[in-house]
Length: 74
Image (cartoon, rainbow, N blue to C red):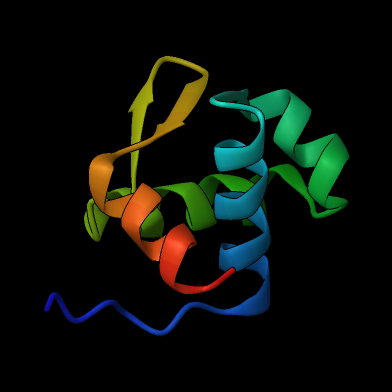
């Protein structure tokens, strides 16, 4: 079984939003999560370093690892 990193509330909310929407735009995440752009950007970068999301330009989507994290935490 894979060990997942502990996520902050903001990280978990961003990951849940990306997962629920099957991908999200960075600017939409700022609005949805209600955090500032820098916080969302740093959060997405942290999630990407743990292979939970993939970022392409402004588009963010869950990886297989991110999907697994969501299944374990729902």
